[in-house]
Image 1 (cartoon, rainbow, N blue to C red):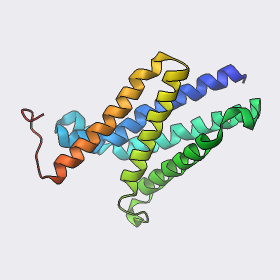
Image 2 (image 1 turned 180 degrees about the horizontal axis):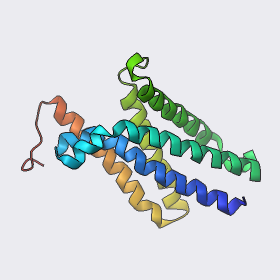
Image 3 (image 1 turned 135 degrees about the vertical axis):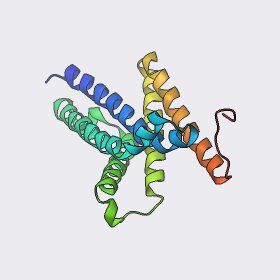
Length: 170
């Protein structure tokens, strides 16, 4: 594969992973916000979205490694991004392990929330960087990521206050 093809594959797998991750990230929150058949399905399939996301992002990682082999490691990733993405992949695989081995419950109960917020923030930062430097196309993705974080925070705050969402209160 040439460099251009690899870069297209990296962008495609990142976008696919983002959509899958949205299902995992928002499944419970959207159901609490709007209990309906569609949001019930989203909540019920949250684990599948998490595993799909882990699989998709593993393919994404393979393309990143292929790019590094094609153009050289020093040109592919830089400094803090290496640390952020490495931490991100550890969180992804931790979430997948938690789904696969849930009966063993070896991760702290707050791990899922921490991992979800970290990964969504990472998507938001990455998409923002691309929107600024490469293409306006990424702006809607930034807005979706930031809105998803806002929805999840709002639902968590309302849940802690004991408020119930209704169609008229939203």
